[in-house]
Image (cartoon, rainbow, N blue to C red; front, side):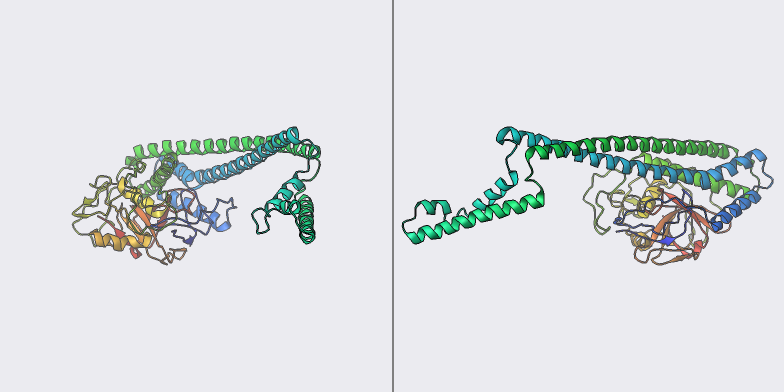
Length: 474
């Protein structure tokens, strides 16, 4: 089962204009749409300009070297890497299509070559003028009389004892002959198999020549497409390596930041870069944490108890809780990572609901990412929390604290049909779930999230009306 939401969102790879976003606690049954290249609209361009201007204003008073590092990393996050991801995915799709076409033509060529070999063997056995269609259909016509109530017609003709018997049986024999002749002619006309075997052999050889030429051309095209896809992927990796270097440089120089606005700007830029790094690590793990059953929603325990999901990406440094991490959660320790070993069935004084790890969650869905991220942070999380909108109620039943106060590491629950800031709506059937990565000074939250409609897994966005949602804590 899938969760779908219609919206404009800012994932890791940039602005996605695709309207379908699928995510569920169960299984995706609709494939994610192929990424489509698109021109940047005026509103998108203006938003980018505005965001860059805001970032620059937050960095007022910061040394030029450090400010440039932050701005360059932001440009990598928001522009260069998203564009490179889109180009790499488009090139990969083109390469796969070209390869598939080449393989199909090769299979046709092999089938034609087998037809030629079979026909050559038939010519050796019964000659080049043998009418295959007529002989085959005539045999079928004869067999249709075998075992009938009148027995074999030819036997009756030779065993006739009266004139009437003879006439009747000759009429039957004539009927058989007409049936054979008419059936053979009809088959020959429809199947075009009555031509002289030599002519058919020549036709097959001509087809083989055409298919060889076509297969060679398509193989060359597939190789070129594969080379282009490899080049695009190399270019993307180069940008990501550059992002890693700049993120590490930024982390080492954060102590130079003196204003709250500059610190927050740097944290957000660094976190976005980190989320893209998680996406890259997840892809490199060959999507090992995938539920092989893609046709049922999450409603009962999965029998695959030996499931061993791929290890989650290495945890990022724990963000320092700020004053916004309070309210409605008195007495709780919100430092991350938490204290639950991966796969814990009991932690923080209650049953976690973790029975089969992440095996019950489908590939790229929001629920799988929420499970992986919470596990990565050593926070409790269950194997059967349900679809995105179900996580809050399921968690309450298991003893988790659930409230409307966001904290780093909390699972953010989007209700079915919930309007979010007026720019997208959670699916009316499945809802959505994400993980809070940062609570910003203005009350907004930076979240990481999965979903098959995103070009990457995970993706990220900033949500402004954070108090409108439920949060699953410990």
